[in-house]
Image (cartoon, rainbow, N blue to C red; front, side, top):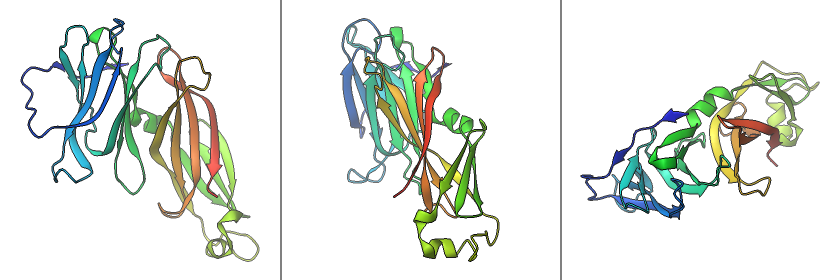
Length: 243
């Protein structure tokens, strides 16, 4: 866990700041409902979907004091917050989701605990991306190997891509015309799901598998994560292809 910056909200310039999302729930553990805001600025005008200076504001329901958390990546599209218990302590944590807008379809995700008005970052998309890396290698006979740094290996049969696509890569005998490697994009989706239906949310993470170029999507690496008391760890992983 890592301490993240936070400040009492006293002299914040609130001009031209937009409320992007708002949720209510007990996030500090005192059994009193708190107000949680996601705010930001629109540098290209009110109709523009791009937002920067994205900031999380938490109003303590008991004292009405505001606190703020500024995520490292604080610019993008469609920023939202979700409140849910990810750690099993019966207190809501705060999930921030921000689309990057890049061609890779990746996004920025953070989860913060705010127990006793002390912010602790318990999930960071950068840490996830560093941990979950893969090699994507085209093989003979219309197969692609996806191999993780944890030695897990998946084989995708790409005959579904069609004759025109395959003829550019393989000869008439199904042999590669030349070596080809793809890649797996950074985290593109992170979804809270209560798999066990016990009130504690797990995480469902998706990363797009790219072939010869970014738009050449082959499928997704899908990783389900649960909190083990110190970190989010995988308990199930699959690879899904695109129809």
